[in-house]
Length: 169
Image (cartoon, rainbow, N blue to C red; front, side, top):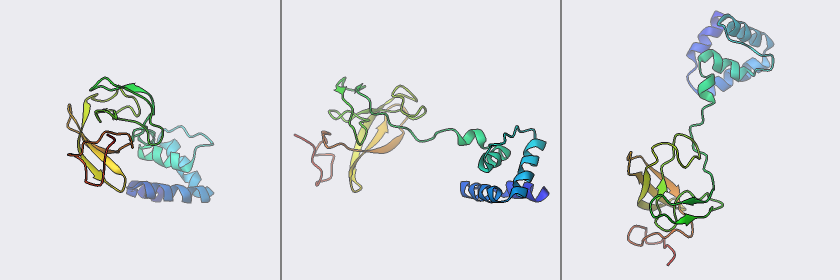
């Protein structure tokens, strides 16, 4: 069991965790050691727990693995926080900014919730082609900066966009 504890202590990356879990799934004796170690540490082990779940629990990463860190963009109609325009859903890609003033709402902490996080207004500061047109934003409240894809109906000002990108008239 000491060897298994040493292996667990040496794990650093998600790939290493997945590799050990795959090995545990193939080796019943190793799974028995893992369950025994988890039980000795006071963890509740269910018969249908995957090896990956057990390894994460032993590393103290089980709860952290369930936290979503990337936003889930919702495609809902909304009222622009800057100009007050009624904005309809965009389809694919999801509409996350106003096509009229190009402003959006900073929503980071609770994925997909328009009223989450700092709630500051996102101002467009630059436009790039990657190969699609993207808008670089900066939040007025917290200065966070990031990029999103532009929509075909976005009114991109000619003075701010690359020469090959034109917004609708």
